[in-house]
Length: 128
Image (cartoon, rainbow, N blue to C red; front, side):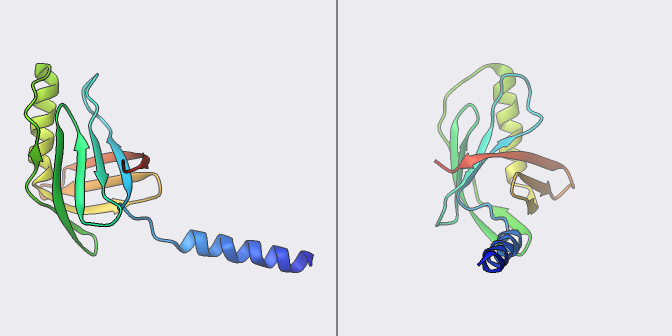
């Protein structure tokens, strides 16, 4: 019985390790933003839709082919905020239009732009 339990545990461990991390259904927080500027990025669990919050709530669609990620045009609400936060949001929205590839681990998401700039996010939970 003990051998069966050990074998089952080892099999579950191998299967869990081989599961590929995915962006779908996850919410991320952008690293390296100015103080008091929190930018999130979420991916819907089923359809190819992204959304998040900076100063404004934003949304769009995306396509994935291998490690290539193409984010569609960003739509957003039109609220005003502090000048520094508005600048950060504006730059972020511009950056999203230049995303070329992505790398995902269970805890992080890195978006690489066409100019090789990287946006690094920390996973903060399931998309809401």
